Length: 367
Image 1 (tube, one colour):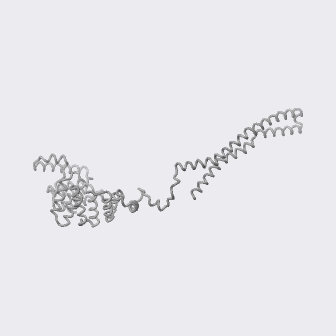
Image 2 (tube, one colour; image 1 turned 90 degrees about the horizontal axis):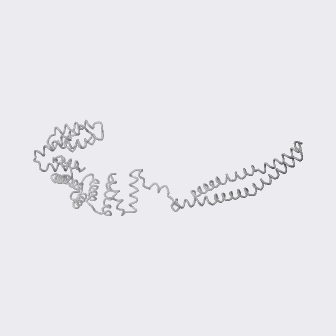
Image 3 (tube, rainbow, N blue to C red; image 1 turned 180 degrees about the horizontal axis):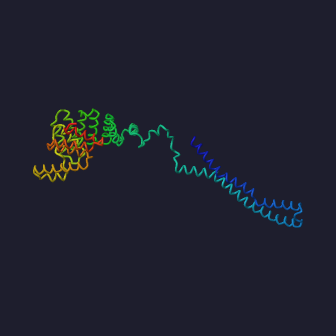
């Protein structure tokens, strides 16, 4: 009701703004009429005759002429213009009083939302806003899913966000619902298994292992499922089985797989050296080489990597690959020397230095 009252006041103000100049114009026109001037002239002639300034015949002739003009002015100002002016004012008033509100209502019905209900402040706070904190957005999605539990897309979007927020038990529930409502797949089973392992503090439990096995049954090359199955074997003390799983994963993986360093580090952890990864072209070229030529090609690639890193030492992953390659080649001294150079190169960048030191822990080079 308050909103409509404000609209009514605005309409009255608009009408008043239209009618006010018309009222002022009417009185101003009456006050400045030509007939008034002629009446003043007649009175002036009477005063001149009384004062003896003009003669009676001249005064009479002037009266006749001014009276004629007065009659003509009265006819033109009071009959035609007056009627026209009154009609114009009446038309303007009708337009202002009826047309303006009617036009406003028509415009609002066409472009406004008269049927939209009240929108309390509490409801507005629950509306999605990309600029608000992630926790608030997650809460809104969760509230939506409580009312729409079969929304497969909602569960699929929510689950990885919950995992990143560290809410692993909630992520497990979300991944289970994603499988139920969005369909089963190797990737979703691997997601669920990873969430179960993270909820258990990084331990691959029997439940998590079962999910990874389901993922591998659907896709034998699913990388996360294979990695965690190897991790389960390592945690059970079966280091040889873990190494076999990870070596098989690397053998089937592309050279530029983003998770390759993680698997190579895991192999180093169980005491298995890994040759540096070659590109597809390099692998094709090395297929027909003898062992000596293949070793020479690998050493050449390592030397080129070392040269590049000396020119641009910001590549932490490059330094880690170089040190890993030296360790695989059995040259620990060069690996230690590369570590010293790497630390000097990234000494001014705290985050890169932290990444380097974390990566070195898995290479067996000390802290």
